[in-house]
Image 1 (cartoon, rainbow, N blue to C red):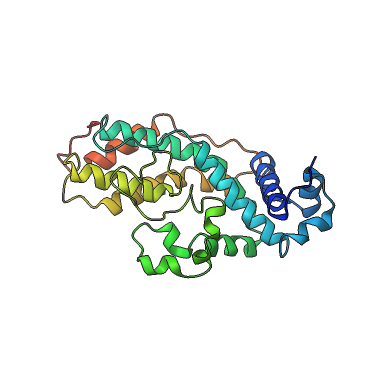
Image 2: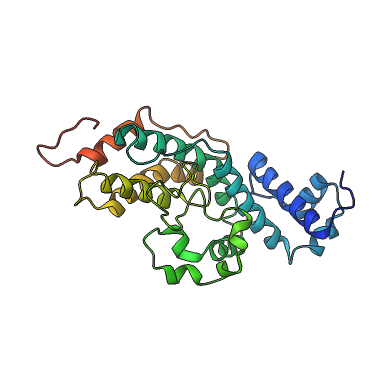
Length: 256
C-alpha cells in the first residue's frame, strides 16, 4: 500500500509498477486501468503525473530496458582478458538473453507508434542506436532534458557513446547499448594488438549485433504469440569464429 509519499515518489512508483508489468506480461494490451489496479490507485491518479497513457508507457519502457541491463551479468571484461573469441561468445549469449527480455516489450507496442516515437526521441533519436553517429545528433529531440536517464535509455537495443577501452567502465553495459559496448571493447582489443589494426570495427560490430537481432526479431514478430524462441546450439562460438577468422579462401577457420 502507498503511504503519504511525495508526488515524485508516487510517480516513480507508478513507472516502476508499469515496468514490472511489462516484464511479467508484456506490453501488448496493457491498459491504464491494469496499471492502476496493480498500483492500488484510482485510474484518474495516473493522469495527475503523466500527460496521457503514452507518457506513462514510454517511461515504463525506459525503466524496463534499464532494469534488464542493470540486472544482467557482465557482458564483457576489460580488453586483454581471456581470449577475444571467448569474450565475444559470452557477449553474444548474454546480449541475446537481454534482447529476449526487451524485444517483446517493443513488439507489443507496434500498434502504438506514439509510444515508440517518444521512446526514440527520449533516448536521443537515431544517434542512440548508432555508436558511430555524430555527437551533435545526440542533442536532437528531447534527449537533452535528461529524461533518458529515467530508464537507462536504449540500453539493450541501442548505442550511445562508445566509452573508454574498458567498454564504458562497466561490463554490464549500464548506460550503454549493446552496440556501443561491443564497439568500445573491440576498439580496446585493437589498440592492444589482439585484433588486426586494419580491421573495420564498426562493420564487425554490425555483423554481430545484426545476427543477434536476427535470431529474435523474426521469431517474435511473425511467430504465433507465446511461441518459444530457440537459439541454435553453439551459435555464439560459431559467429565469433567467423567474425574473427573470416570466410575468404585460406582463412583460419578456428577460434582464436
